[in-house]
View (cartoon, rainbow, N blue to C red):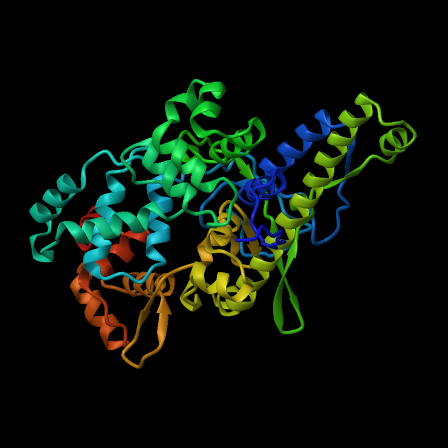
Length: 459
């Protein structure tokens, strides 16, 4: 056998600090992004803040944080918008409601919906499963014997939940959660297998920061170990924690819709586009210096500044792309409200824009759209669908609106039951189960027929 020298070319995805930063910025609200940029500008002399230029489509607006609608009146006038700082909604979107929202976007059977609801109810605020699958199954068999649920069906739904955002929720321990999070990365990610091995066998050494022993066990160089540990540090040991203890806060609409001809279009508001640039004075200083140690330190700060500016640009361009698609898709809603909402899922947007579903999930959370109907979180426009008898599809939110209209015109002394509403919907071509009617009614904030009857008598 002859020795030979060969040159092989290959591509791999490296989790660079820039990529980590871009992913982080996607999920930040406008206020959080402003705070991050101001902090970065204070620490990095190469970053310079610019004041935004206000115009009729970029007024400085803050409204109380509401998951659905703002206290805006029917008048759609940006220039005369009045900040009502006393009218504050305290919204505390829990981990459970966020997971349920994502599950509702997935076409599941009624049995699977019951299973996922019970699993989510068993997840702690940190994101960990508090009850075993066997305990969850026992509860299902006790309260829903008609479903005849099996353990493997619970396992399948648990796996689905574990891969929702935040990835790794619904696991029983940190190691399992971190491993699931790592499996979301491309298989070509450098040091992925090593990071998995460290998490599975040596997480205690990571916690103790025992690098010498890790180097000895893994036989990695100092640099390569750092790369593997950086990959691990990018994971979240408590994936549900960011949803706990949220306080009431003001929000700023990120995007506004304006009519251009006969179509509504999306435009970024100025406050969602923080203006930062490189400070030319500092750049000139390091260009006139030699290859000193201090100059090398300065160049590192310059590179960090450039990365942040690029990450902000990626975040804003992604936000505008997604918002523009949603506005284009939901033109009827902007004109007519909930009753005209079209079914739209994360996968639909992801496929259309060539993005990952997790990216869509991040960019639609805590980003708000100002419309003639009020201010809505972008994820409000995403909903599951049901098929009508004619083969058409309608969104869950439009069905909620129909149910609300049915209840509004009912005889208040003899309110309609969920079963009666089900029959009315069936006559309109919408065939859904009574339990689904109850679910949509409750989601719309409407009480049961018995409660409505009691309220009517009291009035």
